[in-house]
Length: 174
Image (cartoon, rainbow, N blue to C red):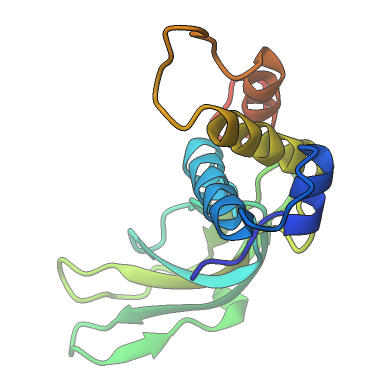
């Protein structure tokens, strides 16, 4: 089961839910909200080691942010053997907001193969604004479990959309 992005106690406090009967439901909703935010923003809500296939020796920006480090770069040489690219042959350009992996090599690779980058990305501590987005989504889903209601057809507040747009690695605001 994925990690809970916001503690149940915090959800119950912020949503003013006093009973513990719905803790499993709240946990499920919080995980779903976290997954939605991750997909929408390109952010990892937990720090983890990840891998990505990349075209050999082209500049590369991690699909999950914030990226804290690159562990290794491997590739398949023309003979079919897996090689680890020496760290002297690549570096992270961190002069922009999103780090970019750049290569100082033109090592030969097996035709039609990709390099594999192993990297660490995701928050070790979720920013409060993103926690609030999770709480807002959980609150909306908890109070209105159906997709729409005749009594109240409303979007999640604009504050949610603004925060997501601000944090998104795919955003024009970034």
